[in-house]
Image (tube, rainbow, N blue to C red; front, side):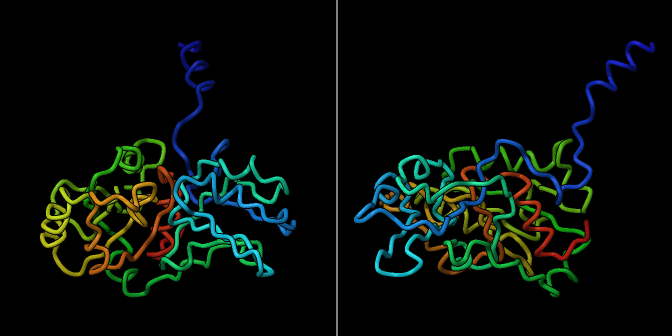
Length: 254
């Protein structure tokens, strides 16, 4: 029996006691853009980016901008930069409450802090039910959304759960670029969620279309009509990114 206890102790625990303080090793998170000058005429980072997340303004003092709403965190821009201007750290706190706030540069290295919504805190601070809809996703973000409820992250400890029916939900968790075939189903699900309700856009595909942004198979009119309350970047979005964002939005204490 003592041997079995020793083996169990050596295995440790999967439970993450402090989700806000957790920093996953090996995770490619927030882009870091140094003050190093770009090489003359170089556009290597723009040319290699598969989702057009990098924007160059060579005549400006702050020439390189990365849009986390488009970035798939592939890291391809880092090795091609001859000035070693680009790198990534393992910061998972990438969420924002506005689309414009998702862009970083050397002069604006950090995302704007998420503003706690007093109205959302009062309404959903102790209980928030989520209905997940994959609108043409690849299942990457969907797997990470499912992981929110596993033994590692256990988001349910804060009263936040995934539910099966939109009738029982307070928020729609949107993943995928929103294909034409899913546009109507997405709208039906949204209509079935009772008021008050909110949209959470998870992953580069949901936020901007990602690498599929120019596809004529998409119909993203839904987001023109219903602006997300929270943007969760990534490809796929890390569970800790989602958790830090939703806890900040609702003002949930650690």
